[in-house]
Length: 432
Image 1 (cartoon, rainbow, N blue to C red):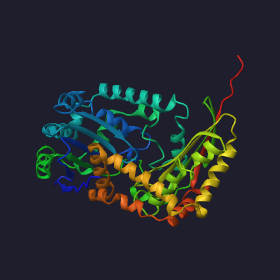
Image 2: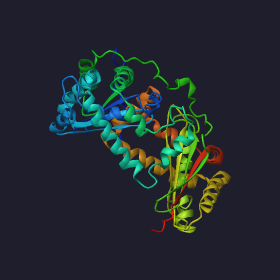
Image 3: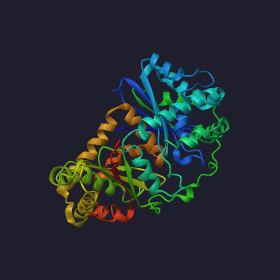
């Protein structure tokens, strides 16, 4: 695994620049991470951060609509973006010689997106986002399951109550004034981290960043109207679920049992132990739900568990069991609880834990195998903790957790009292 050994620098306007030189990588991977996501949206405007991810490709002061992507592709590279609860990320990969082009493009939209923002562009991208929501959530079996669990885990008014996809009603209500205010508040250099990975000189990258971003003034950083202040969100402390259990009858292929567990925030004590416990629970070994529910009890098609890390709120443990037709969901839930109890009651040994550690190590290495993954992870560590060098120590914090701590996490953190449960039952066909 490569040692990233990042060089860090902060411009006078607040933009943080992180560079990891790797002579073996003949490209430049660029990540621009804005510390804004759905948790920053004003009340009544859910989906605004995701909408902005799309609007950022609709032109800026010197770039026409669609021109950003076209310029990167014409340079022999590719570009993409993603929005989450706590971040909006733009990344590109280009030949090293075209690095400055990408930095110029990113700076042009950071400093000049509002110059190109129009009612027509807003309407077009709103339709794109609404169609994306229909394709990924509304018209897919179980598609809104995780969205419902998130809303059940965090009460109405909590910054993490709504998924980044947003509600159709809120998206349709977004105005140009909403967009201007949101952009001015969240998309300035002081709200961003820029990382570059590849065969580049850190000094040269910092000089280029100063040249293209240094003139952009900081953003207005007051809290979004209607959003809870940061002090109202205590990382790692579970909130009272708005609704602990919900049963849904829909035309789905089969019954399902889903749950979200409130866990410590990413980087806080207990989060790594919970990650290992979920890895054991959701793995394919003889110690997991797959062996119990799919192989032995033959109650389910699939059984998975994983961690969704959050920094500014409790992380969420994700559990998803797709049961066989005719299987009793009560039997599925009983098996889940029994497997958690078994882990808590001495089922986690150093020998058992070896497999979970190997899986987490493999996943981390896979992520860093690609320059984009490295660039994004450098941004994440810098944005969340103010220290991109944590990338080179990340695995130590997870793999050093002992069996006793993982067993305690299973008993304390994966307890029924810390979860919201959603069950699906197929709707019966009605006679015509």
